[in-house]
Image (cartoon, rainbow over all chains, first blue to last red; front, side, top):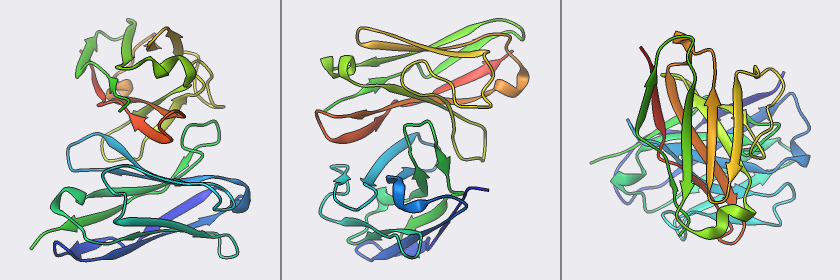
Amino acid sequence: EVQLVDSGGGLVKPGGSLRLSCAASGFTFIIYSMTWVRQAPGKGLEWVSSISSSSTYIYYADSVKGRFTISRDNAKNSLYLQMNSLRAEDTAVYYCVRDVWGPETSWGQGTLVTVSS
Amino acid sequence: QSVLTQPPSVSAAPGQKVTISCSESSSNIGNNYISWYQQLPGTAPKLLIYDNNKRPSGIPDRFSGSKSGTSATLGITGLQTGDEADYYCGTWDSSLSAGVFGGGTKLTVL
């Protein structure tokens, strides 16, 4: 069974840092591109960042460029999102997603990041 | 900046058909494949349509997708109360090297 388990969320002060993790199992992690998508409370989906299977290609939304860093460890079947200089507007549920545009899409359960003083 | 525009809400009666539009502000949609997601309250989104009109395995043929010019459409027939959810279109904009989602459409089954 394909599983993506998101973790690392929590409460952090503005300007602080947080590192999200996504543990993948049940599929060959190394062959899939992976993506982080976030959803602010009561709001829509926002694409955050994507990384290719071998980390050759990495892309960021303008809203997080220069502050967030996506990475993966294929030996550990894990995806990460290092978030620095956090702002109130970064408050959201963050989802780890396999093959976000399909057809073999799978989403994690999400982890909540709250940026507040 | 590529923007996908969806109506905030649509509604229809059980058993009826509804369509949800997704329009792009630039001409890039002609080169992009549209995906559609369903998000039930409190759950992660679920892929309904990819590559404009293809259904992943397990998605019933009540759900369909199409695209014409700069506009894509999700169709749902035989509406059920369980279809009440938020629906999002999305795409990888290759010209911007960025992903983008529409603002979402709330479907109410009256």
